[in-house]
Amino acid sequence: MATLPELLRERGIQPSAQRVAVAASVLDAGEHLSADQVLGRVRESFPQISRATVYNTLNLFVEKGLLRQLALTGGHTVFDPNTARHHHLVDEVTGRIYDVDWEAIHVADAEHVPGFHVRDYQVVLRGRRAD
Image 1 (cartoon, one colour):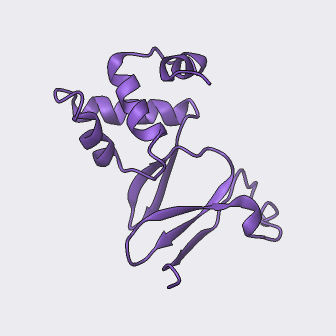
Image 2 (cartoon, rainbow, N blue to C red):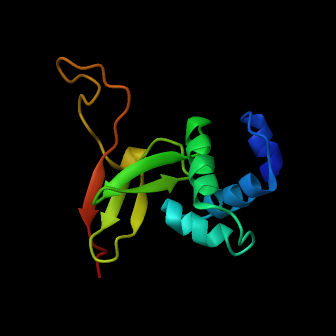
């Protein structure tokens, strides 16, 4: 398995210490983090890192296909390290976002909306955990 610096290089990203720290906090998070959450995590090891550096790095990672940027809850943007096709479920009690396997949801004719060329789609479910 590639190290984070190797992974960044494979995507054409120069692996500075700050970029590696951002990658470590978001790519291995296992959850959907906001930029401010990433900033808080990175500041634990790089207290001097600026908000702009974190935001710019996250946007670079999106551009290079390492992350997906999503606006699922109230217009708040989160970053998803899972770039494979999948859907999402937003827990209305906790606000947590869960990945849902692509094959778990069947959508008919999503690519064939009259008058549009659909590039991508995903289903966003909202609910709460079953007790």
